[in-house]
Length: 315
Image (cartoon, rainbow, N blue to C red; front, side):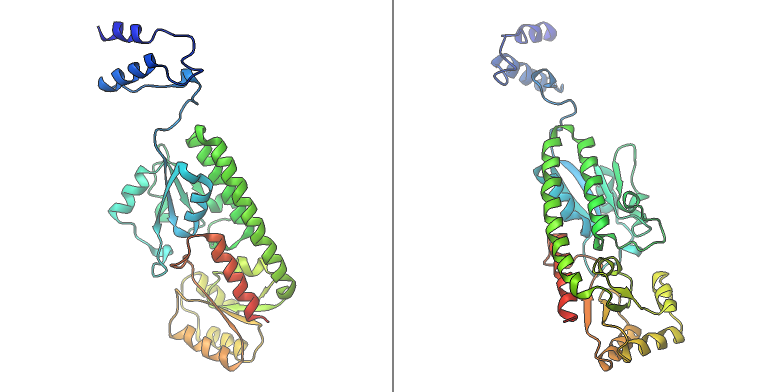
């Protein structure tokens, strides 16, 4: 009986698809919903696979969330797991709520390179599209994982995320293409600013309490003089030897570098000693954090301000 009724309601009127949904199709859809069935509108030209709601996008760390939002516009709903400067993403242990967000995601964006392994290990790849930004940037595990400071990695990330969106929501292809184009224009403006700063910072030296901003310093043409032993210990999250610390203090205390870069998320009595030595050597200091600080909603705005901090410190 129901099928006979549907056949009667669904008789073509010759212009239903050209004029939108005709009255007959409206009644068909209503009846199908009443019966607990789903209705597809591909016959009227809607792309196959069009989603009823927004894509659920989860970013392991907040650095990449603004990029994810820019690229997806109003077709995505983005949340991040780690979003506070007081949290170390390396050692983060996801909560039950975090796991639920990841399991429900259409697209999961992870930094990769060992920075947030807890996130990629939690995803069911059969249900969720995983975008590993280190992988698409050619950065292997064990290398510097702070990719958001790299112009190259940001551009690769944008393309990979946009591609994942198109795969998950074919109907949003034009929106995602426009989002990528708009974001690329903003990235180019940032790189133009970095290039202007580089004209003053190129070949200048720096030392860092951690390798957080190495990619940005590289984009600025700067040379890292952090003592090798100290740098390796920091990268391995182990304690530097007394000689490593002494070498670092001597380097900055004698003013042998142009600037000291300090990761404010990871400070202790050892880094405080180095900071004091830098003041003695009159070495200017640039402070930054791994996570995007409170007050920033846009990755590129944050990076832009940081490169300006380098420019001011090196005047």
